[in-house]
Image (cartoon, rainbow, N blue to C red):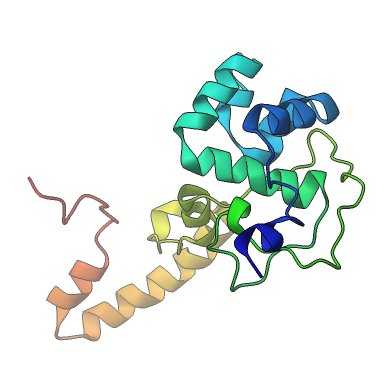
Length: 177
């Protein structure tokens, strides 16, 4: 079986980029394309000419749009792990798989991917602060414990170690000067 016979079932086979883009823009519009593909050329002053120019220059954007075309517009099943790294135009689509009706995409319902910064914010370990950052309820409870600590401090011989632990929290203590 030749390479052309394998590619005949691929909806991208023989499809020009401007035809692909015009089909997507006609069906979905620039707003939905910008939201679901996260390509800024569809968001900032979108036009067919500027989008085509950008897509021809940047391979990652073209592949993103081709994936969107195959798996959202043509509604094909997602590729397996073995085909994930292959560009969409080179993927082999079995003959028994036929394109379906386009997915219905609604503006404002695109899944927002996690970025490094948002991951750090949600998964950051919280620092332990000293008593000056406690709430009012915690302060009244800590007053009683402080009076007990003072009594115990007088009986301890190692007062130097206790005085260091009672210092206020300084976030810049270890910063270079």
